[in-house]
Image (tube, rainbow over all chains, first blue to last red; front, side, top):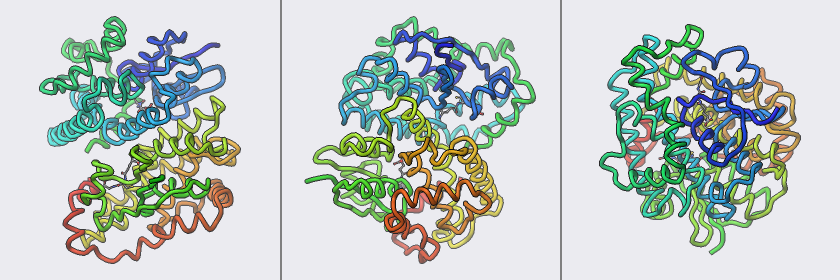
Length: 244
Length: 240
Ligand SMILES: N[C@@H](CCC(=O)N[C@@H](CS)C(=O)NCC(=O)O)C(=O)O
Ligand SMILES: N[C@@H](CCC(=O)N[C@@H](CS)C(=O)NCC(=O)O)C(=O)O
């Protein structure tokens, strides 16, 4: 068995992995783990991934979790173009510096609005508006730092070319955009950056990777969205409880 | 100017970097930034890291923040022994996997345990609500179980037969709750044996030296009014 990727394109780190593999023409079998259908807690998936999280990579017997680890593994194994994961020691360190900050300030923050507007209501739970407001403040602070400290006057976050940092960042930022907070509005530098990353990836791939998340509100309105089965609720409720 | 490391050994990722640099004989100037005195908020340190966090590295004109980035930078620049961050593709991916995993799990839980058990009482002169503390410790327990079952398993070290950056990052985290008096290793013989192996691998003297501050954290005197005022926004954000 060749390379398999377990993903759901609703999930931002899953999209980063998907886009990376597609853009670099890495051959893989897509194994969709549909979060809304509760497939994360299915027996089949449990056997694959000891953490019950997506994305997951399976390469023969080798199973790997964590988007950042997966992206680095793919860059090294398939020797993708050096700009993604630069060999220059300082530039590579900048990629890791971004990813460390991202884990603290971006990850965990930019997904909240999807939970508040879509995922929680789907299972009859609620995220208090006060928390949504607090989350908005955290996002705005993080965006300011992203713009000032990382992007600065460069075309991309850490160098003159696209790196893993840009991909990870953009996928997180697309999450609130999809559910109604266009955070690029009023932030021309970030908007121009998004345009550059999108242009580099290609409009077609970008659309394909985002159609699921960008249609989520419409699906919600039409009531064509699947309601997660009861066995998926406990982990979902735990996630909701962690929102501050 | 050679390599400078801005650290406070009260901070867990700072301890990991300190041990790593000393153990590998990497020459550096230690620049202590005392968090409890608010030195990370000083103008001088803001010049180094405008985000006001430790650890930070300065190598000539090159300034780098974020512990994982710093460890990987040192690993490459000083060509340390392979076991810290193996060349082998899969072995290296295992270390990357742990380093990515820890941010939102062990990191968060160990930090919150320290704050909820020791720091907040010092700053606010009253304990955190018991249900908050209970929730924090319950989350810590879940994470410790994952560390043991999903990472360590029956291997000598977290990612394989030898000590790696993952072990260093993990053990320095666990010493946070240990410093608060929480019995991390009790009833967890596999984790306890792993700790012994790490201490032996890095050397007991170095391990103890790096942990002197955190192991005495319970004796920290009540915060003085100036530090209190400087640090209060941060303190309050830790209760959420
Ligand atoms: N740090 C991980 C995060 C993975 C993650 O949290 N995935 C989410 C979807 S975006 C998930 O599977 N959540 C299920 C759960 O937490 O139970 C990565 O970057 O891969
Ligand atoms: N992700 C960063 C975290 C850095 C961090 O949060 N450092 C803490 C000490 S452990 C700090 O400097 N806190 C001061 C503050 O936030 O005001 C890393 O791993 O280096």
